[in-house]
Length: 317
Image (cartoon, rainbow, N blue to C red; front, side, top):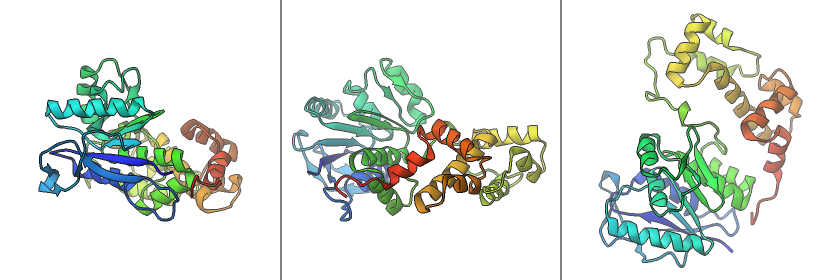
């Protein structure tokens, strides 16, 4: 039987995060049997206005008794009466076996309800310091996209909610369903890495830009290129290149190369029947053993298990 999912709306709602939650849990998917029955709801009597002046018409509820899952896409309301009602409803839902997930600043509401005490949690990096000061009993996680602990999950900023949503879908319906949802949304089925990889200025300045070098590397992942070659392509010394790369992308060039090779290998595992050895070679790894090592270190499982998970029948699909 499909789960009933309530997605929270409130005055001042962040529209992007709400859209991510709807995409994950309220979009009808005829190709997957017993899919979630998602609905946007509010506990507020006020007009539901979102960013950009958009007004949202949704059903008002006073509790979560008819739902199995509650998603908080964001939270910024200073309405203490509304917050108290929500906290009580969330605690009741969790006590009867329900699930609670938050995106971005929504972690503040779960924390206020006491549902994150003693757990690992994360929120948008802009709010990290405030979150840690306000909730010292919660173990804050640096450099992760999300934390999923049983029936409670929280994600980092904005689009990381999609990563958490896909992980929940993967757990409920299997890898094939999660891949199907990711493909339909044109996003990565499994993104790895933490917020430390995000740069404050995403687009480097044209002068001295690393973009041509990165593009060349991505087009030549099947070759055993190394950081020295990238530095040569950029007409820099190795030391200068390492420093500029870290300053621009906040990650070492060696780690970046490994992550791109893993992503390239994952796409081949998903879309081809080539052997592990062939895929390792095509992805620029020194050997199949080296690829297995990096898969285990990064994903926690070897390439063969990753491929096997992709081919497992999905629950209800």
